[in-house]
Image (cartoon, rainbow, N blue to C red; front, side, top):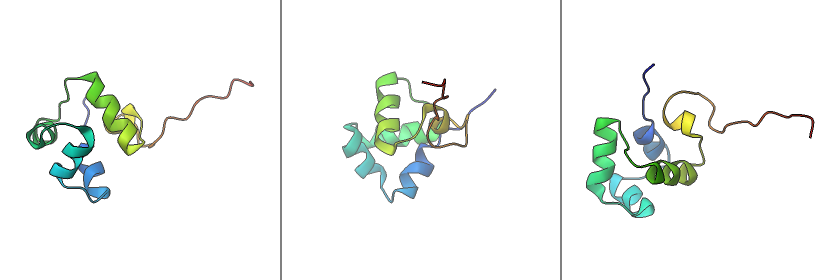
Length: 77
């Protein structure tokens, strides 16, 4: 199963340049460009920072779900 990293899509929807997003995530602009071009983010800490910044699930970021936020199952609690 493949995936499509939605980083560029999320960044553009928020009206951010690569430079602005890099500043928010405290990484170099070249890093954002690399992530968008290669569709790969090697560090889980960066994945977490991205999903928290955009308020999306990891599944959504990776194209595994079309739901922005992961909905928790209600177990009757």
